[in-house]
Length: 169
Image (cartoon, rainbow, N blue to C red; front, top):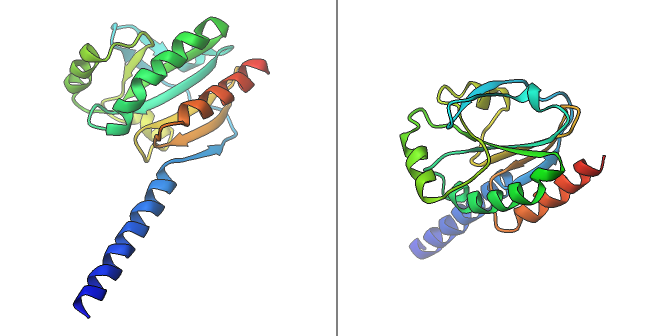
């Protein structure tokens, strides 16, 4: 009896964990204007989303403590390098209150796309960020088009497909 309860409990927990990972590792189409923001980059320059109108923009909300974010970061760098000459901009938005951990992480994992800091989570709230990482794709007219919550290996292929589609529009 005790073993059956433990087994049932274990299966229930695994089911919940799997369902949760599917929920947070999801992609959906979006519509509507992307909320404008201005954030300071690690270079010290302020970057304003509305100034990027005309480019396809990917905003990736991440944190240094997030395992999937760390796994995804080098792949985002490859995407950035591949599409930047075609009118594509990738913005990495770090959501940590204390930016020192992110800055230390970026010493080891070098990226050339702009890293912005959102220590008050004001911008994260504008985009209803509820999972790490969260990635939003914005078309050339400033409209939100795709949302990805979480990261699993292979999502970079979805990103590339969606970026190519938006670049062709």
